[in-house]
Amino acid sequence: MLRTIALTATAMVAFAANSILARLALAGGAIDGMGYTGWRLASGAVVLFVLSRIVGRRDGTHAVAGSWPQAAALFGYALAFSIAYLWLGAAVGAIVLFGAVQFGMIARAIAAGDRPGPIESAGLAIAFAALVWLVAPGVAAPSPLGVLLMACAGLCWAVYSLLGRGSIDPLADTAGNFLRCLPVALLLMAWGWHVHPPDVAGLAYAVASGAVASGLGYAVWYAVLPSLSRVTAASVQLTVPAIAAAGAVVFIGEALTMRMVAASLAILAGIALVILAGEGRRRGG
Picture 1 (cartoon, rainbow, N blue to C red):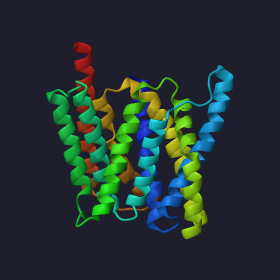
Picture 2: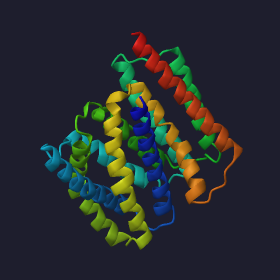
Picture 3: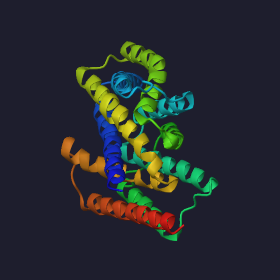
Picture 4: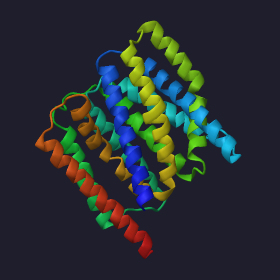
């Protein structure tokens, strides 16, 4: 249980770091959306390939695995995420992205018979309401195309997470998925360099996002997914906007408000209800 909590928390911090790095890179015009996606995926592929080769030689296993459906979902998420943030503010982007993730994963859970109980439903409602309260101020007339792209990014991430629930070798699977995206990533890098040459800061943010927050973070997420129910896996991701908001205070200098603190605590309380109720239901069953 402690290992699952630690790995889940690590993955959520990595996801939040991706949001912060994207804001730093794209909001300031340090790099364009396509170039950012390309550098992010390519750097993740390189780091994961090296690590998987080292681990594979040590353990006598295959260096890379994964699948084309997983790679397609990963690429769809990464590209739509980056481009959508060119048109959407952080608040609108967060609610659309994680709302779509939760909708996709819970819809699949219900279809598979993994229906949340009353306490889990209550915790889910609390967490989602707190998320809306956290990001809703300032939401006005968002770009329809930006909303559509971010919703697509969320659904792609839901698919990627669901496909990874059966992963036996998370590092090898994540490496294989990133490597399958590499040819298109190289094309995006070239296109981005042509239309909007990135500066050093933009490249640094993209590489950090790809090599650490995405590559290693997603490997950790694949490692913990088999230990989580579909409902819990969907619910814990609602903590990411709260973590990202705290990170923005520390690393970007955004103001810390009582609304942010209260909403973050409510999100965590709702997630705790979902996880504890889910564990109790599975033990009772």
